[in-house]
Image (cartoon, rainbow, N blue to C red):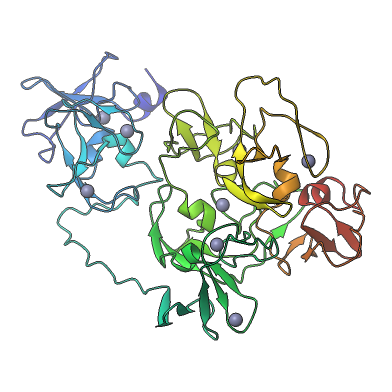
Amino acid sequence: MSVACVEKPPLLSIDQSKWHEHTLTHFPRQASLTCDLCALANSSSPFYVCLLCDFVVHQSCLSLPRVIRISRHPHRISFTPSFDQGNWSCGVCRREINNDYGGYSCIKDDCSYAAHSKCATQSNVWDGKELEGEPEEIEEEVMPPFVRISDGIIQHFSHEDHHLKLDENAGSDYDENKQCQACITPVYFGNYYSCMQCEFILHETCANLSRKMNHPIHPHLLTLVTRHDGVIKISSDTDITNYESSCSACPWLCTAGFFYECGEEGCCFKVHVQCATISEPLDQGSHEHPLFLTSKPGEKRKCSICQDDDYTETFNCIECDFALCFGCATLPQKVRYKHDKHTLALSYRKEPSTMTYWCEACERKIKPNKRFYMCDKYCCVTLHIGCLIGKDLYMKPGASWLYNNRKVVVVPNNQHMSRPFCSCCKKRCPYKTLFQRYVFTICSTKCMYHGIP
Ligand SMILES: [Zn+2]
Ligand SMILES: [Zn+2]
Ligand SMILES: [Zn+2]
Ligand SMILES: [Zn+2]
Ligand SMILES: [Zn+2]
Ligand SMILES: [Zn+2]
Ligand SMILES: [Zn+2]
Ligand SMILES: [Zn+2]
């Protein structure tokens, strides 16, 4: 007998008319029973049975909600004791649903969304609110992100004092110093809006970002914020991969740009634009099967690309043991390079290759089983990811944070005729941005954290 049972024996019988018309009896044996409400056979919670009807249920499943809303689906879903004929699969874990057991299905007749009982009620998708008997909330009208002034001219809520003008010729020439102020990424392709009076730029897609969104890994509604007042503080004795006021999904240090933030009291979840807009199934070149956000709360996985462990939410393969962290998943799939007129694609060689790839920037070998950028027009231009887009992404010149209580400022690396030397590694700073901390010039956050001058 387990300790829990000695301390608090389960009631011998209970009446749960919400779930079953007859009295349920505690079933003391550790037999292999399957719960009719959740379809699971684990004995983590005591079983109750109705011997008249062959009805079996976990004690804990008797508190399952009837009607809920989850972040993965736009409609309410309600508990169903079984599913109609046909093949159903869970919209959360993506695995098959056994039709004979309970689960959740969409309340809309023309929508076929379904989920396992345990999956629909896990804490990263459900906010814990039972909606049975609650009237459908009237969709709060979401303010549009911009007002159209005239053809191709808008006033965006993040830049209210000036008007922005649509530039449809982006892509013809590429300026690596033009950076979108929402996603802190250069304008590689596509249309963008630029301010008619200052240097402010937004991708057309970023200007269209909705001011509210539901994110698949968080149960509450998120709001788009374009200015954040919190100062990011990092110190060498805390875990530097866990910046409290940066993005909650990825390990990148995001000190500028737009964020989707949770407004729920006591909840500090927020995601930067790339982590907010990436969606499942993820079908990228880094893996041959589609990837899904199937992580369970409390579970930690190792990213198959960067090999860092400790990720609580990853894009997972359901056919094999592959997982991709948000940091690796959100790297741009296609970029531009100032010395090549073509597009460079994020590439990966699974099979051992006889080809040797060299990085055009640092002239060192590229390990093809790590990802790298390659020209898609077979110019043979290949570059290390870091050598092309930098070791620290999402760095906006002028942005700052505190490291060991001393201010670090992001500076563009084009201020001098020749590139300055890093105070830590003593090499020339190779990336587009560098960091100024006190009297020191530092090439990357990695150098800063591992070799404080
Ligand atoms: Zn159960
Ligand atoms: Zn499931
Ligand atoms: Zn639906
Ligand atoms: Zn953008
Ligand atoms: Zn402006
Ligand atoms: Zn992120
Ligand atoms: Zn990774
Ligand atoms: Zn390189």
